[in-house]
Image 1 (cartoon, rainbow, N blue to C red):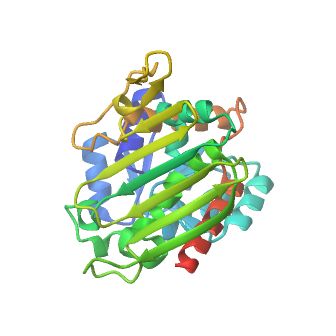
Image 2 (cartoon, one colour; image 1 turned 135 degrees about the vertical axis):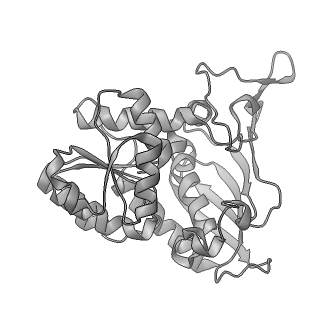
Length: 314
């Protein structure tokens, strides 16, 4: 399980017993030392522990097999981004058969800024320009990008950005009805995929947008502008950077969000802990039958097919 998830679950649900599963002994030892949890070499070894829910936080290409094994054990499953649709239809059917909850992380849907933007857009026609980029070797500077899943063509860095952003963009602006892609490779990075995309979207709501995604920018950037007649919003990726035009004062003012934002030292300012906490809480509520998911495998299958098409057009 990811360290962030362990820490948050322990903080939120102090009575829960947590176990770790990892094939690498050094990682098991690290988890035991840091979090004082029992760790196992395999899911099979952990089967007898009375586990009710599993968090799948491994590299995306390993998710399908792990999710299937967890569901076959009768465990509810929370999974990080999968990035590929391997086994989606089979695992959706298996979850129903086993009467297990299958929850897919889509952290931006739980951010206060995104909730506010969705509320303001309100299925009306807006224009937006959105740029997200960061030089690939800077994502995990402590390891070679070729040893990290973002270096793999099937789970590449641009694909991950699109998989993070498209769920909330389509929630805010509506289903995408048309698109146009301009892309190429402009770095000397040792990768076999395009490292930058400029995508023009048309939404069924009448909204139009330009999404710029890259693993090229030497400065980590997340910048957005949204506008229509007499309305304007901008966002630079952090809770305190959401701005809105006030018609009465003819000025752009900071939007005051109601939730106090948590930020963990060592992460960029874009990474806000609250959203991770909120989606864990929602997963637990779904397991207890108190809620239904905002976003699931069925919706993500459509997003992944869209990303496949965007890559193919390029």
